[in-house]
Each structure stands twice: as structure tokens, then as C-alpha cells.
Length: 94
Image 1 (cartoon, rainbow, N blue to C red):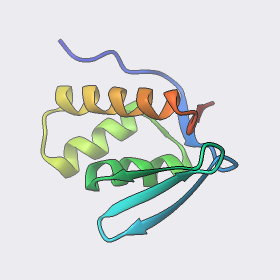
Image 2 (cartoon, rainbow, N blue to C red):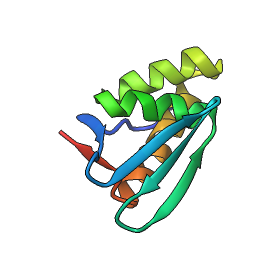
Image 3 (tube, rainbow, N blue to C red):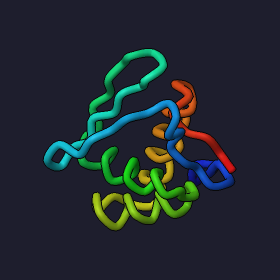
Image 4 (cartoon, rainbow, N blue to C red):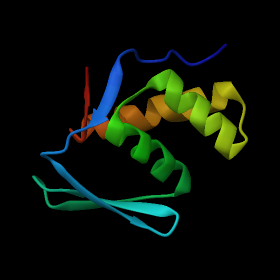
């Protein structure tokens, strides 16, 4: 059984975030709450795709191809990642 994928295109909320690539990782600043987040290489891959906008399916495919995990695991990880970013108000859905 695969994880239920959220629908729509997700994008980073530019007015709320500042970010920089740091090696293979990404550092994100929530400019409203003044909180920093460090994203590992997998999170950094997803974040960079979210800057231009991506669906959960597109993120899942990218993660499964890059991290060499099965699609079910990638889908669950993407859903959890999007839910966490959404909880902090760092992404919006179109």
C-alpha cells in the first residue's frame, strides 16, 4: 500500500524564507519566526525543486531516483516533508 500523495503544486514561500546551499545541504531561515532549519542532502534536493514549484509526485520521483529508495518509501518521506514545511508555513500549494 502506498502513501496518499497530496495534490497540487507546492512552492517555497519566498516572502517568508531565505536560504543558501551549504555543500550538499541547504540552510533555510524562516524570516518571520527567525528560526533556522538545516536540510540534509535529500531535504536539500526536495527544497531546490520546491523553489520553482513541484508536485508531490515529481518530488517522489526525484527522491526515489536520487536516494535509491523504493517509491513507497519516497512517497511517505515526501508527504512527511511537505507536511512539516506546511506546518511551519514555509510552502504554499497552488
